[in-house]
Length: 272
Image 1 (cartoon, one colour):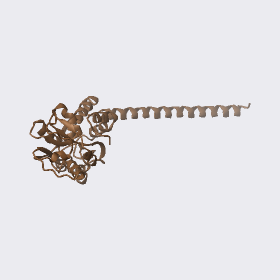
Image 2 (image 1 turned 90 degrees about the vertical axis):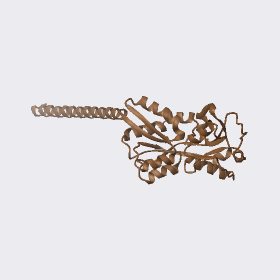
Image 3 (image 1 turned 90 degrees about the horizontal axis):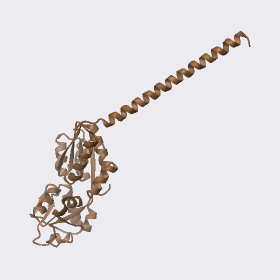
């Protein structure tokens, strides 16, 4: 081999070595950057803090309270603050500027008040459904076995106000059965209606299955077929007028997760 050939061969090997070294360095840098980004993403995903304010329908009180405790345990440094009331009252508060991060309504109609007012920060999604049931005094002294029985003279019956989801659903059920009913009172949310029975101020109330279950032995439940015509979808959405968008997103994620759905299912809610 000539001296020129030897020099050419050495130069080729040097260039190849330099190229390989550069490629390895680039790969290492890329790999390191990717790991750093992944770690950063993971860290940012778990580093939630502050208060997340949730406005939720009264019928969600027990299950959401349990999920709130679970959320705080999963994310140390966070606090979940709830406002439980009739969905219509909550929607009115939100559109009036009340600060809240999440809204969970008992009907699409009440959620529409918020979305129409441009107060939602995302598209609402249905996370559970709920069905009506009659709550009576323990032992069912009024012998209520059907929705029609509630129309009997002398029976003190309570309904939710027509403006709230449980009241609107009750009216649908009555219409499906061709029935007319004049209650002794209309209540502003489902818990208030149930409370009338628990305090023995009423013989029966049309509430949700979940509320009968939550009351335990304080009331007795009576199912009725007309309730199938008045099942309520429950939508949930993040809100614009909140101060903790990251925690709001995470809380909604918990509600919709298998974990959250298990808690809601055990409370008596139906799958979406």
